[in-house]
Length: 221
Image: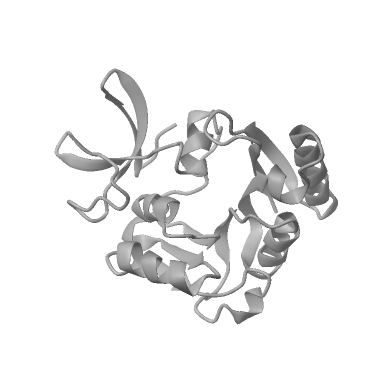
C-alpha cells in the first residue's frame, strides 16, 4: 500500500515501509534516511511503531493521507507521531495527546519544534474536554495507550472529536487489560465493545512478531 507520503523501499535486500521526510536531513529516533528519485525518505521501524507494524502485517486501508486531521492518543516521545506528520504534510495536522509532562518535553524537543503540523497536548486522554488546542472534528483517531480502559477512553474521544464516518485505529494492548486471559479473547471482547457502541469493524490485525499480545483494530464510526 502506498499513498502520497508512504513508499515501500528495498534496502539491503529487505522491503521496508518509509515516509517522505517533512524535515529534510532530520532523523527523529535514529532511523535511516534513504534517497530515491530525488526525495528523502525515513525508514519506518515496525518494531518501534505499531502503525508501521500494521502496514507490514497487511493493513488493507491507510486512512491517514496528505491533509488528514488526526487526534493521536498516547503520543509518547513522537516516534510514530513523526511519521504521521510526514504523511499528512503541511496541509494536515496531528493533535498529539500525552499525559506525562516529562515525555511531552521530549515530544516538543524532538518533533513538534521542527514540525508545525504537530500540536502537543499535555493532558489525560480520559478528559478530552480539556483539549483546548483541538478545533473542529478530526478524520482519524489513533489510540495507543496502555490502560485497562483503553477502549472506553478511545470511544470517549471519538464521541467528542471524530467526524461521522471517520476512522479509528485502536491498538489493543491485551496485557494492560487482562493478563490472565487468552490475548485473542481480550481482543474479541474489545471489538464487541466497539460494535455495541455503533462502530463498524473493518479489520483486526495481530501485530506479532513486532509486538507480542497486541492487535490493531480498524473501525468506522
